[in-house]
Image (cartoon, rainbow, N blue to C red; front, side, top):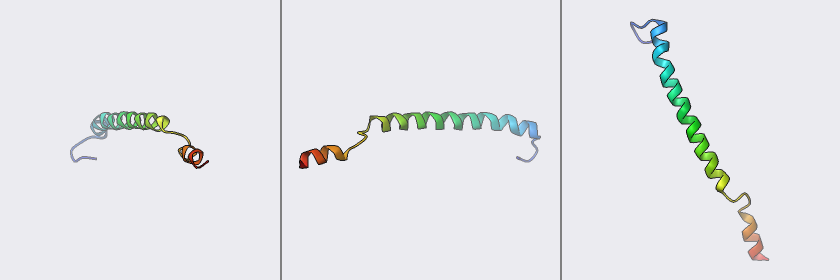
Length: 52
């Protein structure tokens, strides 16, 4: 806890920082999941089909 801060003041400052970090993490996870969903689930299948 920062020097000269009560626990209530420290929590008041910490809550917005935690909320911002959580929001960014959730946003980034969502974007990554969308990118992964767009990938071919079985990329080796095309290669095997070409081999015959």
